[in-house]
Each structure stands twice: as structure tokens, then as C-alpha cells.
Length: 182
Image 1 (spheres, one colour):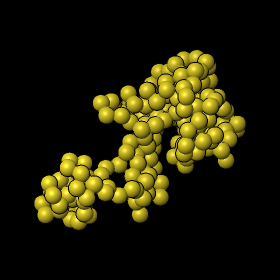
Image 2 (cartoon, helix red, strand yellow):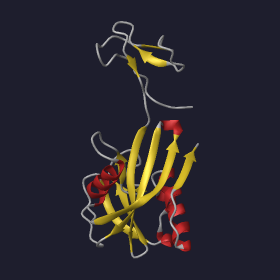
Image 3 (cartoon, helix red, strand yellow):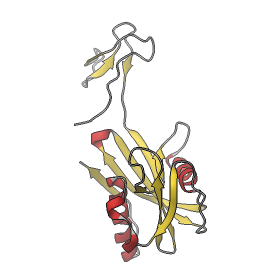
Image 4 (spheres, one colour):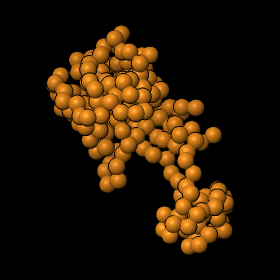
């Protein structure tokens, strides 16, 4: 079951909307404006980020924002309009970690249907071990696999991505992982 705030008013004219199946042949319930007949489509949000690596260690950021303030995460955030998935992942890594890196291939795509999100992570090779975290990050730090604060990770998507990364690293073969989070 998707949890999302309902649209209450039309973005075109401000009238209160009703939820119903539109008369245009659609088969899903949508927010429809009874005044101007605008149909409001709701689509998943893309969360984009990286798995930044320096000499076998992964870079994690301690969150300085809600949700999950004070918990560790990979550098990631919502994709913006006007950027590619790769551009968004790179931007988020700079904003949150202040890291210098080279973007590598797409590593993981995680569907989080319950909250209407798709998370996409790229592998990234860090060019140095110096970081300048932005205001959304309390601390940016490198962790070996046995040092990861697994119980202090902010999101299940981060945990699932890290587990797959370290599994692939042990085999020295990186694939693209598709994960459905229920």
C-alpha cells in the first residue's frame, strides 16, 4: 500500500479535487479537478546517489537533516528537474560529502513502492580521502566493511546497496542489482 499525501487542490485553478477514474479511458483513480478538468498524475520520485570508494573503504555521511538525523547514509538525494540520473548522483555526492571522485557504472536500482520512490546508486572512485561536507552532513567518513555501523544506517536501501557492494567486491566482479523493497 502506497503511503503518500493526497492532492487536495488543483494546481491549475485551486479548486478542490476529487479522486476518481477519469473519463478519458484511464483505468486508475486520479486526482481530477471538477472545475477545469485537469487530471493530476502522481509519479514516483527518483533518489540518486553513489557508493564512493577509497582503497576498499566506502564513504558514508552522517545526516544533519530529517528524516533519520544522526544516522549514516550513502551520499544521495532527490533528483532535480533538468539533470540526468548520473548528474544528480554526482551533484548529491558533492553537496553531501564534498568529495572528489570519478563516476563509474550504475550499480543498484531499488524500487521502494510503499513510498513511491526509485533509488539509483552509481559506483564512484574517490580521487582523494579529503572531504568537505555540506550543511546536510554532520560528518563524512570512510569505513571498511567490518567498521560499517550497520545498526546506525539511515535507510534500508543503503543497507541493501552496501551488502551487494561488498559481496561484489569480494568476487571482484560488479554487476547491476535490481532490488524490490517491500
